Length: 351
Ligand SMILES: Cc1cc2nc3c(=O)[nH]c(=O)nc-3n(C[C@H](O)[C@H](O)[C@H](O)COP(=O)(O)OP(=O)(O)OC[C@H]3O[C@@H](n4cnc5c(N)ncnc54)[C@H](O)[C@@H]3O)c2cc1C
Image 1 (tube, protein in one colour):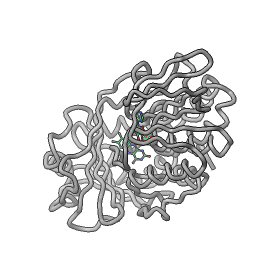
Image 2 (cartoon, helix red, strand yellow):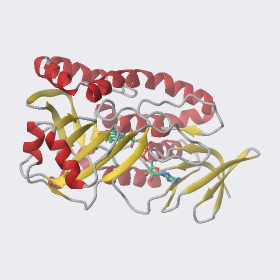
Image 3 (cartoon, helix red, strand yellow):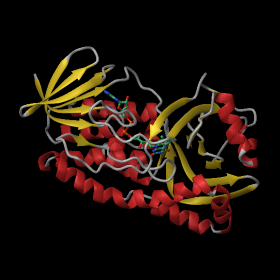
């Protein structure tokens, strides 16, 4: 049987594309390699653009149990800065978000195949032949690559050097803000989450932590606040999740091959400096219209929309990496500047 549209990956990009395309009347199949909701490496912060995009998809973070976030604290060494954000963000575990999106996609009429991974995609005349890990073969008229942090053979992104690491943990004391904790060779974000489970997530430029204890020790050593917040913290997982080769700052620039790319398979914004999930959702929403124009025109339009948030993210990420002390001192002296950076980094793709 030939599907109209085959979406590879059921993260925010793939699921939102499946919802929008199915609602627009396309016959959609989505293949997601995990068999059940999982926790990918992600800071789980949703900004206002993600909230707007989710509303268009019929979801609201509060209804999913997300924790509202309206304060940001930055700390390095003995210096810290605390500011009120110019918007309310949300902290929501990705397992909850991704499951809710896939449920919406199924309700919209998409066929969801879970627990199966796409291994190869090849052109077959006017259609595409898609081979799965169980040996099954599917055919589709159009293919969307939304496999996020994971590459697909034949559609490689350049590999970056960064390693993303994530750990859910119970803190000894309650947390009421997102806390950014840059250190030597990494920057970390700590967020409160539902059910008292905080999320510690970090981007390491090189040498990721060996285990949960090493992760907590390295973040705690970078600031007095980090040490205080993480004292007595109990990891909820035996090992932190990790993802290597993250190509921060990369954006797809061709060559075109007839496949639509969305989410992290189109552009990878530096963590904590931009809204990766909002970018993924917005690209997914835009895909329903893009199907009529073809991949090249769709990608060109997406490139124009993403250029601004990608530009904003680059200098902030460089400061995190190379001058974290300067960044936190500047934030302490100029809290209005932090609010402007937070507002400027907004995707503003929707709404
Ligand atoms: C350290 C770190 C922290 C971050 N923090 C935040 C944050 O706080 N807020 C934010 O907005 N963004 C954050 N991001 C970015 C965000 O995680 C991504 O931008 C977002 O997940 C992209 O969505 P996606 O759907 O493109 O990819 P993903 O979320 O990676 O989803 C891809 C899906 O495809 C599936 N898949 C992969 N390969 C195959 C295959 N071959 N066949 C079938 N299925 C497949 C995977 O299982 C997965 O479910 C962070 C990223 C990192 C690395």
